[in-house]
Image (cartoon, rainbow, N blue to C red):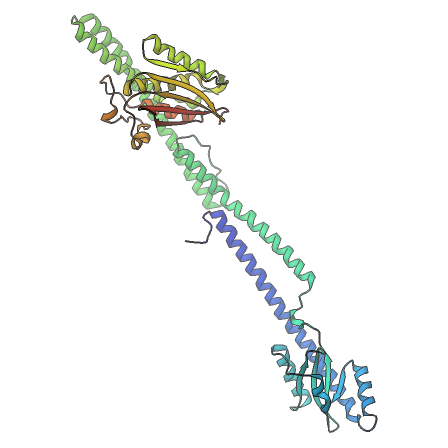
Length: 440
């Protein structure tokens, strides 16, 4: 498993933060090293000069006033001077390692002679240097700070480093968001196109690569819209042109055929062909071009159901007191009619139509008592020109065009809703359409 974020935005932020943090750490390390080197040089030169002056003063420190002379030299130079025989009582030990001590020891031996030694008294925080003056050995104690100077970082420099790092991180976040935003917009637009929705044109500005991708996507969506428009126009034109000869054919059959059964069969075939052509016209109709209007959903569905009950079809309607909704009434009528026709043709009576409000949606359900639909066929039956399996064939024996559920799916999507086919308790299928209370 990778520890990197899945999104491009997260990866860009992580990369920029890592680069900024590495730059800040590198700058801090270089700053510390350079400052320690500078302090090392200054400290070494200062101590060397001071120790040379102390050794010169110790040349005459002899006789009965030797202790007073050592005390006076210590006061004048701010150090502590001890005879060689008194060094063990102050608990001196070899100095800690490090480039600062090694460099200082080498310089002291070069200036004061090879017999020069260095010790460190932790309790007194003193650096002890053994020098020879006037034939005697002395230990000169030089005070040192509690912490090595190389570890001293000024508070002001640290504060400015934190401020600069904060600004860089904010800039990195804004930059990563700027780069990832066009890709998020492209992904959202591709999802809308995949669902069959109309998407606005993407901006063709910004980085050249993003602009080129958006330009290609806009061209693709424009071609898809043109193809869809041409297909709908062709389907509508053919369907419309077929209705006139069908009407003449029906009139001729009814007038010329004497056999009542043959005439009824031919008329039924012509009626079925006319119904299929009507479905072609409904499928080719562009519902997105019509506007929304506040309407009574129960009244629209009730009027549609009334036409079926007037024709003695076993359809019942139970309204759910749905409030006024932003709808497209003609589209809703076609949606309900296709659902009832599908339930009557492929299911078994009676057909129950109900409405209810669930949270922020209105649910329209059309339930039949037929054989039901296999879960694997649900999405397939929503596609155009798709027919059910033999287990759910039309009860009237007609073939059908396979457009009824595709029309319902398209209308539900245009209204901002969702269309589902679910099993009914006790057998059968429930066609469920969920519509938002407010337009999407």
